[in-house]
Amino acid sequence: MEEQALRKEIKNLILKMREDNQKNLIPIEASGRHIHLSQADVEKLFGKGYQLTPRRELSQPGQFLAEEKLRLIGPKSVVENVAVLGPARESTQVELSQTDAVGLGVKAPLRLSGNTEDTASLFIASAQNVVKLEEGAIIAKRHIHMTPEDAAQLKVEDGEIVNVEALTSRPVIFKDVLVRVNENYKLNMHLDYDEANACLLQKGDCGKVIKTGKHAND
Image (cartoon, rainbow, N blue to C red; front, side, top):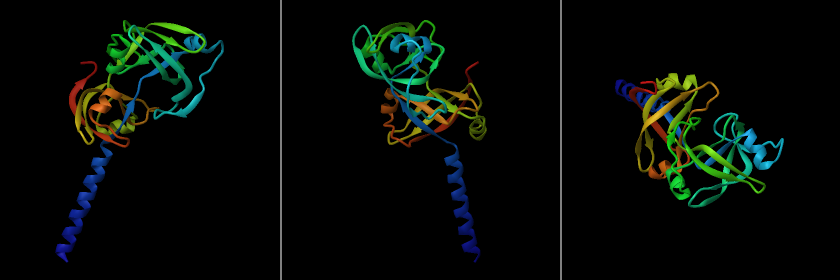
């Protein structure tokens, strides 16, 4: 009986460890090239008073993939059918991978989303009009969205810089990942397609947070 009780206790401990490990994993999502438009640029491209048409919700609450598609025009090439994400923002931003940027012929810097000062310029075109984006094309820095409850569970805080081990068929440790905490976020790490392809990311794959002791304000 003592041996059976011991085996049961060991089994329970193993199950608890697995559950704890699962709680400390974060889902990873690949994000392809896309455009965030200001309302002013929405109207320049589609007409006065135009509103983006939601097609489906995205992983982050309140954001959606729009029905509208646009064309990106750079010095070296044109990219058709680029996704537009809504709702409209204060300023227009184009998020690219390095492969996209090289193909278009633009020097898009690595920046946090929203930090578009002195970034790359290109043209955005619809069937009706063309807008020159003077600045706003970037390669987005890696980041994790999470709620305060997620942050407490993972023992991290807003602005913290962590590493994340992608637990994929070809594991990769991604460094310098920014933690972004907001009660309106949903737990998710975003990679561009270059990064996702590097680790052979598949739908449902997760990552493990590795603390570094660094903070964005350091």
